[in-house]
Structures are given as C-alpha cells and as structure tokens.
Image (cartoon, rainbow, N blue to C red; front, top):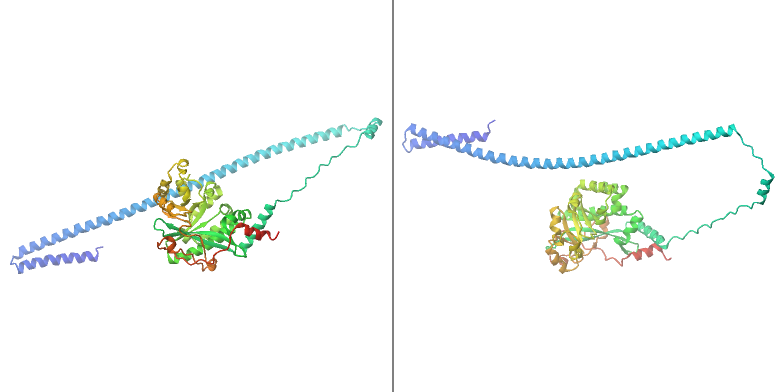
Length: 469
C-alpha cells in the first residue's frame, strides 16, 4: 500500500516541474514544446533523486535490522549453550545417581542371597541334629567317682572388674554451654546489632558499598564481636537464626539507602553452616527469593575456606543463589592461590584481600602471579579486587600502583552502629563523614551513629553466662 507521504512527494515533484516549465514559457519566452521538455527533464531528475535517497535510507535501515538480528542471534546462541551446559550437568547427576542406586541394589541383593543360603544351611543342620537325637537318645548315669570329684573341686572364682569412675565434664564445656545459652537469650531478646563499615573507591575515596558487621549485646549493653561468638553459635546450632536476622536487617538498610542513591550496595556475611544446613538455607533462600529485585546490590560474603571445601550440598545451594541473580564475595583470604575462572563460574564478583598480604614481598615466591597483576587478572573474569584492613596512607599509595579499585579499613572509617531504631523498618544507615575521607564527597546517605558501645570482649559475656560461680 502506497504511503500518503509518497503520494505527497510525487504531487510536489509534478508541481515543481510544471512550475518550472510555466516560468520558462511565460517569463523567458521559450516555446511550449521546449518548456515541456525542460519540465519533463526536471521531473525525471527529481524522481531519480528521490529513488536514490529512498534506496540509501532503506539500505541503512536494513543494515541496522541485520545488526540487531545478529546480536539477538548471538544472545540466543549463548542462552542455548548455557541451557545445554545445565542440561548436561543435570543428566550427569541423574546418571550418577542411577548408577549408584543400581550398584547399591545389586549389593543388597547379593547380601540377601548370601543370608538366605546361610539360613538354609542352619535349618538343615538343626534338622539333622534333631534327627540324631531322636534316633539315639543318650542316658548319662553319674558314677560315685564323678560325685567325689564334684565335691572336691573348688568353686570357681569370680573376679569382678572395678567399674571406671565417670570423669567429671571439663569446665570448658560447661562455660561454652552457658555461653551458648547467653547467645540464645540475646537473640530471643533482639539484642543483635548491625554495624556498617564503608568500602570506598580508590583514589577518589567515594563510598560505593557497605559491609554489615554483626555484634551481640548483653543486658548491660556490653558488645561481643563476631569472632568471639561465631564458633559458639555454630556449635549450638544458632548460626542459621543469626544469618537470617542479619539478612533481614541488611535488606532493610539497603532499601533505605537505595531511596537516596541507586549506586550503593551492602555486603552480608553468611556462614558455611547455613549453606550446608537444609532447614536454615531454605528459610534464607525463601527470604532472598522474595527480595530478588535487590540482588544486584545485595552481595553475599563467604570465607575462602568455605569455597575451598564445598561439598555437593553447598555447591547446589550456591548455584541456587546464583540463579536468582545474587553475587558473592570472598573474604578471610589467607593466600593468593586463586582460580579466577572457577570462582567467576560460581558467581563470585568480589575478592577481599588484606592490604598487608597484597604488599607482602614473600607472596611472590608462593604464587604464580605477581600481586601487582592480580587486579588485572581478576578483572578479566569480572571480579573486583578489594583491599581491606587499610590503616595507613602509605598502604594506599602502594595499592594504587597495584591498580586496586576499592579499599576498606579504619583509615577511611571504622564500623559504626545503626541508630537504635535500625533494627526496625525505619533503619538508618551510618554516614561516613566527608572529613574522614580526606575531603572527598560521599554518594551514600549516612546518619550519626548511636551511642558509643561500652567495653567489648567475650570475657564479659562469658562471665555473664557463668554467673557468680
């Protein structure tokens, strides 16, 4: 169907050619036939120009459509390859499970057949003995000599072994049990606090992320650091509840931060016990599924030892989180023997390495890559290197030579508590004073911290748990 614009252009070209012929005939005094020829020639030129311009425009449009189609085809090919990889992995798991089940069934069948053979032999032996006893019964008569021997023979001596005295339980177990009870009481009474420490860009020192640090308070407002109660919480099976509460409050803080700035994220620590516990992980997974829209800004952080000791259950749970769009970070790095490709395939996008470890000259001999090239190597696989525990300006200068993009440490800001209402939906994120960042402006909203905490330490909470004894 001819478009209206095409008809309008054709009418305009005819009018222009006719006007040119009329002007030549009436003004220039050219004859009518010559004016008509000139008008026809002008109309032909206009038609050719319009056709050529339309052809060029159509060619550019077709080129753009072909480019879009090629990009869509490439995306579709990548998605098909990804689905094929996942399907192959699932088929491999199903085949291994079937083969394992078949081997177990064959083993059980063999054992059952052997037991059946033994039972039949036992039955035949018992029947044979019964037949012998029935055919030839034996009567025994006690002689006088046997009677005398029985009277003279001493009675058997029975030696009673002394029973071992049960050892008293060690005092350490008792104190650890009471410390676990104190931790459980603190969790039940909602005395779990969140401290936020900023991570800044280098060298601009602009706040880009916050790490959530967990603290426990007793009824005297004495603070217990995470490293002092995590092991006891894991031993008492309380770490799953702690991780779920921390996730809840981190999501609340992140929602509050994103109202003021979209370029901000929160790192939330998750323990290996939660990752391997089906009950606790399903609870956390349901909560993260409900807050899937925050996945690009909500980073789950695990220890390096957790990634090096992943079992089948932990790997499947980690893949379930990655499929929902969540990214991972690795901290507590003890050495630089890293596999960037494997980590990137598992969804790791951040690795936090202590500044002292990066600047340690002894690491050159123990790793395959120089620490100064580590940031570029990780960047090729989409992983950002974060230098943590920075406490001096000299470290910052040296890290800039290593092309480190992010930094964290007491030099920029210490972990600061939320306001008392931070545990509720009206949580406010702690602010980083611009003067603390050497005059650099911050992009994340912040607020003044709550009242400074009192003396910390596990000894105080342990004394509270043990009581006056």
